[in-house]
Amino acid sequence: MSHGPLVRTDPLPNAGPVTQTTELPGPSEQDEQPARPPRRTLPRLPHRAWTVAAIAFVTIIGAAGFASLPGLLIDPLHEEFGWGRGTIGFAVSVNLALYGLTAPFAAALMDRFGIRTVIAAALTVIAAGGGLTVFMTEPWQLILCWGVLVGLGSGSMALAFAATVTNRWFVARRGLVTGLLTAGGASGQLIFLPLLSWIVERYDWRPAAMTVTVAALAIVPLVWLLLRDYPSDVGLAPYGGDGPPAPRPAPRRGAARRALKALASASRTSSFWLLAGAFAICGASTNGLVKTHFVPAAHDHGMPVTAAASLLAVIGIFDILGTVASGWFTDRFDARRLLAVYYALRGLSLMFLPILLADTVHPPMIFFIVFYGLDWVATVPPTMALCREQYGEDSAIVFGWVLAAHQVGAGLVAFVGGVVRDAFGSYDLVWYGAGALCVIAALMSLVIRRGADAQPTAATA
Image 1 (cartoon, helix red, strand yellow):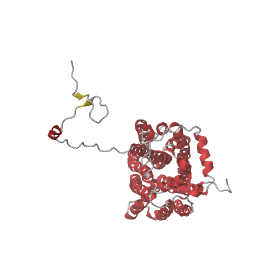
Image 2: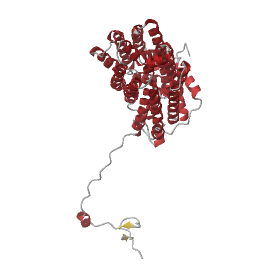
Image 3: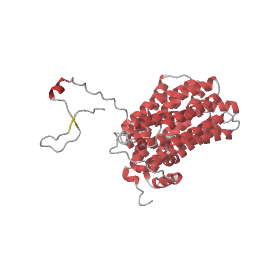
């Protein structure tokens, strides 16, 4: 026969009926028990949004690594196959243009199929393009593999991806997170450029292409296992958000139609054209010009390829600092004025570059690298902020179209830069022209209207 705990079943005076009440120890018994130490609380884990942002950061690092190689291939491909720099530059321009044109459709596809599916597929396409490049013998194969395949894949992991993650997972600290994710591109440049330039110079360009292929495939399981589409997938509200987790929205069908509809609506506003035009100049003066042609331009002046590539990597170091700082500034200051300052300073620095190029690395060149690096993609956080201000829930897709303009500008100058070099034997005219364009971008940024301009005007609606 088992015995349970002592209980009293008779009702207490002046009280209602009591059933199965465990007998409590008397006051003397309580006094005799030693005091328990306070219970230690476990440290609070960071919000899951920061884990998602970290995975996005690593993915963008990889995408930047894939984009770092074309500038290192111009001279090796010219020497091995005899292809003109304009021909090679055209393949790079296709890559850069598709990188941008894919972005708005990729943002819409992420709404339809999820971030994980789109990014994993994009990494696989990049790996295929990079791997097939080692077998090419004709220029059209370079255009197909590196221009089309790598362009489409890397475009799906472009800054529209960063905008999507930021918009879904963060309410607070959006400017800072945008700056951190944008800095992932600089980090990838910092990591991959010295490595790839060393491989190209010591071995060949083919092992460098295979390095990119292996890196793309290595990121796929990381994305698939750790990335999540919405905070509600893990039962959370966005970081900084109030209230219970919002339900996961239903998949949006018609990704292409939605992307084109967002473009049609945004294109009826003056702000869109000003943002897209200024960002096209941004791409022309960074990815299209410096990232693609700085190494061969420095090599024209006798600087070793590894030294020139290392300078680009140093740009990546200060790019991280500049971009994170720009995100912090964007949370506190007028994005229009920030853009005007950034573009004006960039144009000034490019005007001085032709007289700084030499066969050795000297202090004025280091000053240019630091100054230019701080400004490299500092334009991204304020541009994203203006898209959010102007276009609301469609801001990630609209930013994708603005990014498309960025990459079209980059692709155009990547091609024109090679043609100018073939025609005049120097890049000087391209540097001066890009500097003048940056001044125009500064003026365009200042005349962007505030959020009221998000609606189409009566004249054009």
